[in-house]
Structure formats: C-alpha cells, structure tokens
Image (cartoon, rainbow, N blue to C red; front, side, top):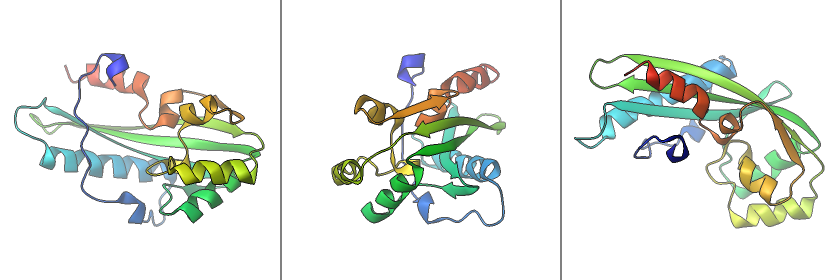
Length: 177
C-alpha cells in the first residue's frame, strides 16, 4: 500500500481463516465474506486515533473448479504447488472497506489468471523448506517466485494475485473521501 501512497497499519484479525470452510458458496462470495469478517475484526481490534477506514482482504486460487486456499502444513503446500504446476489457475481476491464513522461498507472481488510452467519436485521441496509458503493462498508469492526463476506468468492485475488489488482499492477509497 505504501507504493500507492497509502499510510496504513497492518494487524492480524485474530483468527485463522484456513480452518473455515466455504460450504456451498462460490469463490467470489467466499473471499468477499472472509474479507468482510477480517475488516470487521480490524474495526474491533484497531487502536484509537487511527484512520476511520478499515480494509480486509482474502484470496483463493481456483483450479479445476476447486478452491485452493492457504496451506496448513508443508505437506499440504507441496501438494498444492504440484497441483498448480504445468497449467493455469485463477486467483480471486475479495476486499471489504468499512468506514468506522458511518458504518458504510463496500465489498468487491477481482480475478487474475496465473500460468505456471514445469517446476521440478526438488525445486518445490527446496522452496517449501524455506517456509515461504506460510500464509499464502496457493502456497506462493507471485513476485518472489518469478524473481526466483519459476516459470510463471499472469494475465490481469498482479496485486490481485498478491492479495490486495490496489488499483481497484484506490478507486474505491476515493469514494469514501
């Protein structure tokens, strides 16, 4: 957010959303609901004197019609990365903005596509050993993996894949001024 000129404080919402299950709703509704849950937790946890707007976000990957969230173990991260290699998947990020002064809220989702080439099992094992997968939907950070030389490309907004679609968020925040 800093590179977009937005001052912010980041706080953990106080719960592990990886333990939650989406039930029968689709990915867009799921990530929007989790984003709102995180934003509302942020409203409750924020320190006095901080700005009036609270933003929450959540991201999931979609491969073969199934949602792939944040791995809870190294074994799960390995399985996810093996599943994502040599193909494409969509990344859906939901965002919620809550104005603590008025109670106004806005929710939106953005989608981007990631194409992943062949990644060897040894490369996956080496990466998983770094624990860089922790806290990341799909078990990876796009920029980090591209810099590391993984064969990845994308269509759409990179920041959507990174977990917070900044161009759209900046436009939404302007409506709260």
